[in-house]
Length: 203
Length: 370
Image (cartoon, rainbow over all chains, first blue to last red; front, top):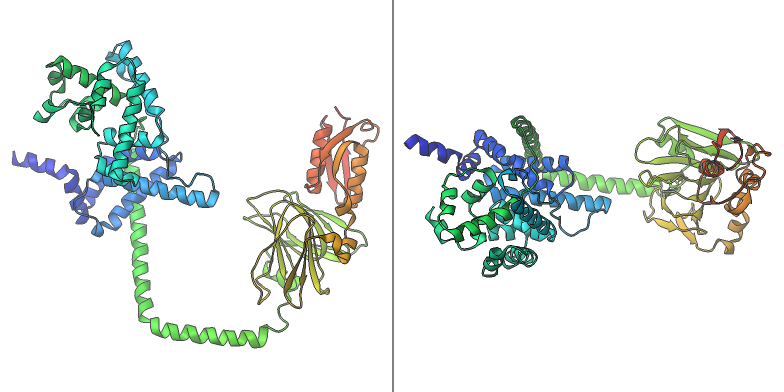
């Protein structure tokens, strides 16, 4: 029993994080393996250059190790990593902007379309239609609302963390989420319960 | 897992890790399925949350374990590299600190000494930069062409730009422009028509001045035995600055637009911008035929267009007169180097028309126009 809890603790994000701070290469590698694919997926939603995204993410991890002594002790590892990746890609965009004058100075946009899961086999046709419809509504949302929703419900970040990441205050972040769901509510006809529930929701 | 009994909003479910892993990864560690079926109202809520989550997926990128492993290896390599850099930097900083004070003293001494040397030896007179110095500065396989005849000569550069070199002038240029810049060196006078390439700016080094262009036509007059250097722009925009080799002069860039000119007084290292060339007697008098000719053609017989080009570049164009007898063209060739002009004309005539260039002799091969 004791050993079982020990292994679970060993794999816990924060334990790995603290081991990493102490210079444990194995913990570093484990965090890398745990989050790499997910971070690439998120990074790809912010930049069209897949190669560069992976480069950015590897740089984030590089800095993590090189500057491990100055890392904070209690962080939500996932939020920290997502935010670092976002910052780095934003910096890359800025640099590109200066040199090529292509992108707008405005911060980076969440580009990717949400997609519908393909394995809806066991669902009936009506459900699939509903999901497709919702998906379309979601994709029509402004990029920042979309990103906020993604970070909140897909990555499970808190509103505070999202606010920090998007460099806005708490209220603006919660407004982003609220407005996102609000427009879904307005548009999503045909499902009564969600309308009721969202209207009573406080974000 | 009792918390979930108090869930009343979709948001509650969406933020629940365990719920998400049930929906998205089908890992039901907490018996969500059973729990959901306990009440109808709950089932509705769960269903809506589920639909929303399903509609919010991001496209999967399937990374194999080996892909991630490779990325990890790569990252470790980056770490090693960065750590090495860091140690070198720390080392440098230490060395820097150690010798900081003596360094300051030495630097001051060197500065003062060179300032003194500079003012006493270089400032007077040596600021005149000649063609030979420039060439020696950059002699990576340059080709030199000298025009000793009494007629202008046409030179076509590897990028398609054309240079009409005046008598008693010479131009040095690389056989092929590689790198990010195109640099040529002029002594005397020439009219340049530069093929457009924003990625590779074109520089003309002539005595003490450097003329930078992207694609345009202009004339540079820089005889080493004359007191002035002149740049006259016909189309496009050029930037002129003094050469770094020429000591003591502000490194200001002067922008010239069409029909503007610049005269650089070599003895005083001074730029004079001339905005209206017709007001300047010596400039307006010296305008060569190419600058006076118009290359705007509206429904003009091809033969006449060729004649204009022959006149402008002092070349000989041989073309099948009978076959092109009834061909008329409407085209604007003002801002194009010679080869570009010929290409455009051949393309407009159509019918597999092409040209061959052999020094000052151009041959047009054509079966007539469309």
